[in-house]
Image 1 (tube, rainbow, N blue to C red):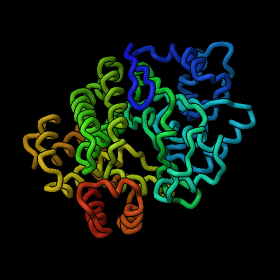
Image 2 (cartoon, one colour; image 1 turned 30 degrees about the vertical axis):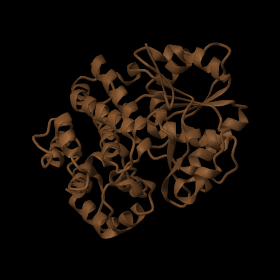
Image 3 (cartoon, rainbow, N blue to C red; image 1 turned 120 degrees about the vertical axis):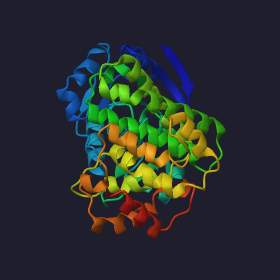
Image 4 (cartoon, helix red, strand yellow; image 1 turned 135 degrees about the horizontal axis):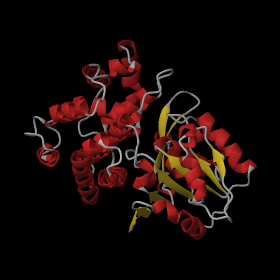
Length: 377
């Protein structure tokens, strides 16, 4: 069992779920709200979680998490939290459930509306340290939200924005790769490429943070070495362990900042009626963004090419595109339902996303429209 203290307390290994009871006791949580989704309830994973809880713990389940969590869902979950006298949150699922759980933990001690806490509107200074205690348990290996300081929420006004604060980092990340065994190949691929996007964007971000860069490089190497194995054999225990580690590393590293991939995927994920998967969007956007940033990252593409197995720095975007294709990722945004008339509004929204500020190469709305057009497929 690997016990890691970096940003937060992390339990990482097969079977880590068995430690949940003693970890809740340390945190003083006896009435948690489990924030999850209906798919995990149907799959029996929520029952598995309940089975790991001691009799002294009484859990309430909120299973209304959507693929792109909304402010409305946060308020419904908060109502359940308060109505059942909860004293902590367990975010159980993919990044959406964990992000929604963070927003509930915030509003459990902070007054609504949620929009006043978003990063781009000065929300960091409004978030106090008394956020409700939260445990994050990922059931996918991609977002790394279990160790992340942010929550991405679609607000009532339609904007998909980040709420960011070190006080939102879960008190415990319980990373059990067994929870990802048998995850469908398509979801395994999309979430794994989300982790790759985190590692790559962190590494090329212009901000200075050598430890984060080292972690990002290590995570990227794990994705290149083990994601295809996890996709091809959903029960490959070593591959699942390595991918959960890579996902965790991606979010450990992105404390340094992300870039245009995420700044574009956030507004795309908020397009009404499409409900686009975040990891898939990141994968599809990555080649075009890498081409856009070429020449603005020093020798970092040389290093990434060596780590990932590309022939050269110039070949890195094509390597990512081929890797996507080998994993069954759509060839472009057009296949995902995005139409050309949507692009100007998405590009304009991108300039208001917090990730826009840490892209290696400054970009205009016209630049982002060009990136989107080249990602249509």
